[in-house]
Image (cartoon, rainbow, N blue to C red):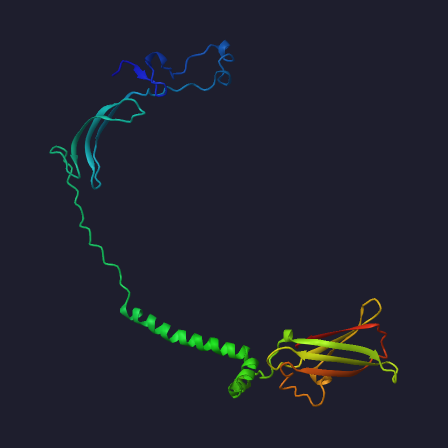
Length: 284
């Protein structure tokens, strides 16, 4: 239609495309030219490409889907970068056919109305506040019960009227109610370890414990460690409150607030040789 005149899609230069056509038909080769025109040397044959400006002529097509287009499109596409189509559309749109087409009109099935979204039952909306109303007080009671179990000794000292309740609780849970345990409030004011001059191999340990807190505290364990001249451990012994406290001490009530406890122990060390000692307090 353009007499071979085409336009380059890259530089927009017009040229005669007929002169640039490449024949795809194989040509006959002489026997002596087999090696000269080998495909390895010349490469594969070049295929002719459509020029940027070409003619589009499609036959009439019938589409039976909903919203189909039936007819004929004729025209040309110029300047592929612009992408415009010029031509005419003959036929009918949206499922209708031309009088001579002979194609029945497709039937459109009715579309059912969308069902409304399912609503949450009213019963669930009412159960949620009721569940919260029951669960929140129960959780608060459990929290108070856990706190009472953990701080039972301090509660019994500060509020003696609650001691019977705490004792019944411990009877069910297998625990005991006694003096509070705060090792940070206990200190060793003084201590001394020396050999008994009257008995060979016997040591005398004296110490004074002080409760610096404002509440009575339980008697701690004493850990006595004997060391040699290189400060290496020779022997270590943990002493329970009943082993070092005097006979008049009330172990259940503990060490009184701001009170002191004097300790004096006789230790048999005849089987060891020691040069020093360490004394340590802890709760078992």
